[in-house]
Image (cartoon, rainbow, N blue to C red):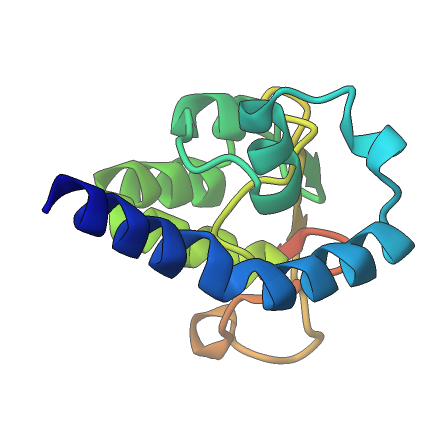
Length: 144
């Protein structure tokens, strides 16, 4: 029985997928040569391809660049007070709103920067404006 189970498991996990996996591997290596990937440990490669999944939200706050605002402006203080009270899932949703992804890319959270820029539409009541973003440039346009 043990031999039968061993042979069956080997067939299911190895032999039955050998051809499709070989085809996939050949196509993958055509676009991404193996010599470029061998320098990474598996954990590093996963972070490089998928991004970081754990965050230091206070570090994120520290790395923000302000345009039209100062760090101590009331709007900015209120923004960060509300942000830090959000549950983890909502913070990730904000990150997805800002960047298009709920993860920080492989270069690391300590190097990740985004901008908060004053959104001033002439003649409009700021209380009636909503924040919007430029995902490509990681800019949050925030009305006063």
